[in-house]
Image 1 (cartoon, rainbow, N blue to C red):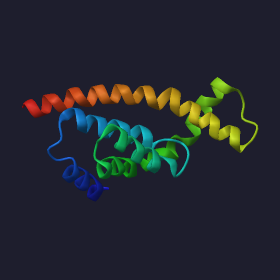
Image 2 (image 1 turned 90 degrees about the vertical axis):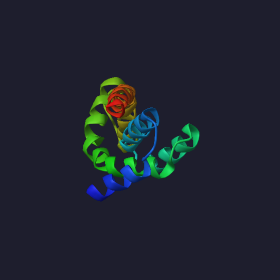
Image 3 (image 1 turned 120 degrees about the horizontal axis):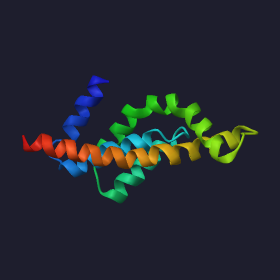
Length: 125
């Protein structure tokens, strides 16, 4: 874990506070997407669309991958509140995606704004 954080620090060195906050927030949110294997593809697409560092975004994705496991069932439960009870594995996956969209995406915006403020102040010091 420490080695991944060191790599991330090296890859993001010299980035603006806005870019760094964007990489961290997007990588964390997409890294918790509840379908295994898709966060890597989503992070690659996001990096290309947002024109940010692909290695940095993939490292944040890698670091946040344990959260994907930890949040799988809570996100499924949250999604079932919106979509009703799950009847099979496919509907459980849809419930987890709905829970991710309703919880993680809004928190990602809050995280981005918070990180941007914190990183700007830190660089001013």
